[in-house]
Image 1 (tube, rainbow, N blue to C red):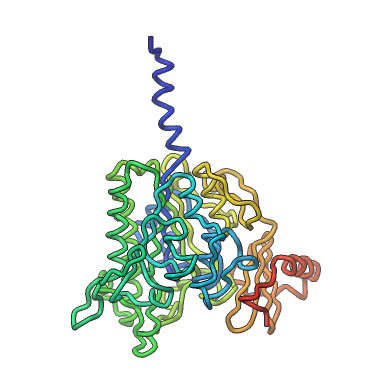
Image 2: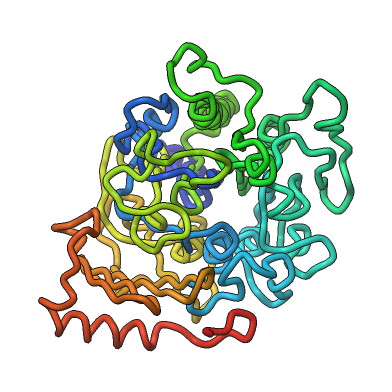
Length: 441
């Protein structure tokens, strides 16, 4: 006879299995600042869905991108290596450097039996090279040809797998085919098609990155179909459009969350949101207008925290604590082992990342001895964070800050703390290996 205990066990087993293998949705904004989101202090731009996601999940205050520009940051996210060891350490040659043997998060999920899809901006492997998405574990891929191509919001073509999709974006008078809308439509279709099996969805929006080419000529490098809900604001036209793009991205995130709920996937899907680096000042946009860096100093291309500390929100009902704020420091290269633990997979050995999965669940997590970044544009520079201390070195200067007391990194403590300076300098000297593709001049 089938006992009550056996019946309860049979009911619990599928739930336990679900918890061991959640679906994963990773949403990545492009050049969104730490202070551009309401729950991180933004007062003017509306982000109700991200704010709700934080209320229903956990908001991390000390999460860091892989770098202060796009390609090396995304490489760190996908491969688990920081920029002292990664294949891609700058935006130069980013389409050709990733090799067949460079294992990515998408390949890890594919190996674990997941269906995988990404829509938007890849930026670390071009068509015809080993790092192209379809060669890196993505079952479905729809997006831009290259990082430079991703600067436009009304493309004439996009890549669909290994084929071109004619969007007919900016031909004629009327603009059609707003790329973020196309990516959202594909993401929602993917969820509909794959609701019965475990999946990884990487939604890599280009919002709010500027169209650098357009902005260079017109000073109006923010493209969006309309500036609602800010049409009546007495702001510069460009800033109304910038705010509208951020709210539009928030709307897209809300639609993804609504789709998960409608499909009955809400409680078994780990959703993560972040940005690839700090806020931009391109295309005519002024990051100070909306205080996009929040309490931090600097923007994209800086190694102060304004260039590398990013919003990071995690939601998974019943697993990730709701309404929690967590100050555990981690960085993009920790995502591979973190997600490996979440789905019961094995991350490769020897990477720089360590699992932050316990932190996602509101439990104590192992801390790094240090977090390290390097940047190769405009002269070689480095940064390292160890505990509350942050050291930044370039050819021009060396500065030391205590982030606990000085989140704005405004007071240089290097002279007053020679022992700390020496300790972090030694860490920095051993944190990297030379790369022939990114030589230190």
